[in-house]
Image 1 (cartoon, rainbow over the protein chains, first blue to last red):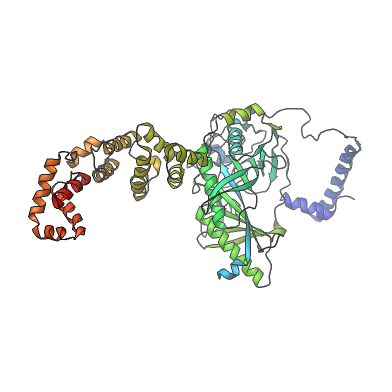
Image 2 (cartoon, helix red, strand yellow):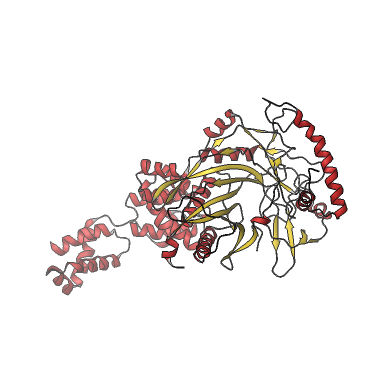
Amino acid sequence: MRISIEEVEHVAQLAHLKFGQDEIAAMARELDAILEHVQKLQELDVEGVAPTTHAVPVICPLADDEPAASLPRQAVVANAPDTLDGLVRVPKFIDDSGAGLT
Amino acid sequence: MNDELLAKYESVIGLEVHVQLKTDTKMFSRSRAAFGQEPNTLTDPVVLALPGALPVVNRKAVEYGIKIALATHSTIHEMSRFARKHYFYPDLPKGYQISQYEQPLATGGRVEIWHEDRRSEIALTRIHLEEDSGKNFHREGVDESLVDYNRAGVALAEIVSEPDFRSPEQAVAYLRALRQLVRYLGICDGNMEEGSLRCDANVSIRPRGQEKLGTKTELKNLNSFKAVKLALHYEIERHVALIEQGGEVVQSTLLWDAAAGQTRVIRTKEEAHDYRYFPEPDLPVLEVPRPWIDEVAAHLEELPLDRRQRFVDQYGLTDYDAGVLTDEWNLAEYFEEVVRLGGDPKKAANWIQTELLRLLKEDGRSIDEQPMSPKVLADLLARMASGELTGRNAKVVGERMYQTGRTVDEVREELGIRPPERDESVVEAVCRQVVDAHPDETARYRDGNKRLFGFFVGQVMKQDRNQDPKLVSKVLKRVLEG
């Protein structure tokens, strides 16, 4: 097994996912199979091929800085679990930027 | 903490500055970007990460990135890449921020600063483009946070400096220079209170003479020049105290609590985020071809320190005066407009510094809100130059013009200020009258008590405030001594 239980737990924690012990074991097996499959790519000889993240050579399209209509607030907050005065209400958290701290 | 203890150590500081770009729309969508609007009214499917929505890069934001890179002599990469930075906060709808990681827009570069009367250079590590998060509100004693997504997706340029600062004051000087620069370039309003310019700092200490760097901590929430200075001093003293007591600094991230005047640990190295960066699959490589860079360079605004030097060379101002006048782009523009309209550069510089800036300061106004147009000030200076208004009266008239927004003539009429008497015989008559009325003082003056001269000038001026003190002095001297 290439993927350890600890690694699955770590990734699950990063993704804010909770699993039972048996689920984690199953997940490790499945991830192993996926990795093994992808491992095949390593057999390819890529000597002299530039690293690429897109299969098609596309240059990033750029848009002009022209504002379009915003979504109506009613629709925006309709998906929120809870709201207050048009703001989305969530359990308290400390943000990094600090810009919102009062 | 005593200075001797502090002096044993050298502090090493680096800054990461987030510059909110003054574009009309967001970094990756055409949702409007604006401050101070009703919460959650400036969003769209891209901002809110609704399924199927795809980001499209804002051309203007890239252009602004090129500008700041050019102005800091950075190397702009013709190919750069966006990356996803993952973390889960309610203010980040996608669960990741689109940023740049391995291949930023620009690397290297430098910012020239004035610190302790010297021009010095601070090296930059990188400049990259990214998007802002939403804004959160936390209320005291309430166990909840409120989120506004208007700011989510707003275009940011992050400017990362090398750890080149050796004191909090030097770091502040750099931040001021950077703020001035982005304002000159017109790419950011630099308003730290509104968060359009934000700063994080890395700080460590090491015994003087030691090459190896100490363990650093990261400070967040430094949203004013004062906060940067105070937080860094606080943190440096905390490091020194820890080491002096035989302990060690733990690598961690801290928040500056301005109200309490102290830093607070929010996480240590063990809890550090694993951002799982990877190339953003929704955005192809960002291409910035050389001709585009050249085009932006051709129209780049004159930079603050260049303008300061030009003011010295072109207008014969002192370096100090040039520094004051170029501090704000708007003020430099105002000064040059006055000069273009015929104002004498040195007199204009004087008047702006001693009168206009004083009046603005008293009112707590910025130069943008000043009520005297350059044309009106140029006119006032011209009347002074021609002798039509004495220095003293010009001051009175100018102040009243500032208060009322009226012209020189309107104010002069209102205050009953006439041009000073030019006929020497008329002035002489007044002088004789005053001298005759004060026989004792006259005798003492003629006996050698020359200090009484000021008394006579005062008495003559009292007769008619509109007289030119210079002419009065000249004539009075003749009357008293002749």
